[in-house]
Image (cartoon, rainbow, N blue to C red; front, top):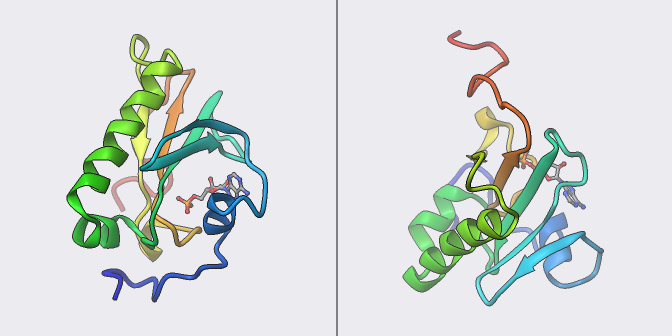
Length: 129
Ligand code: AMP
């Protein structure tokens, strides 16, 4: 069972459907471990999503259940995407929402990459409350 409050993996979630090629994405990078594509509603000049190739609902699920080669391959792919997009010099932010309090909307583990402008404080809404 997945390790998070998100329930069992839903094969109809939007990222599962993107992985199966059932709906399109603006692909940036793909290897045996990961797929990276532009977020459909970008919140920064660069807003990329990187998803693992596997049925994991969240970071909690992925970190606890994924085989080690997939965990390492996935995070290496995140770094490769950022480097190949030329983001290393100016910098970028990684973000992974996990579960209800973080506002995770899509129940397939994903890492956001934000870049292209000063990104400000880490948390904006209800900071410190
Ligand atoms: P989260 O709130 O961390 O679950 O983020 C989900 C992200 O997926 C949001 O930033 C959405 O804009 C993005 N998203 C949802 N559907 C799509 C899609 N079909 N293609 C690309 N990004 C999507």
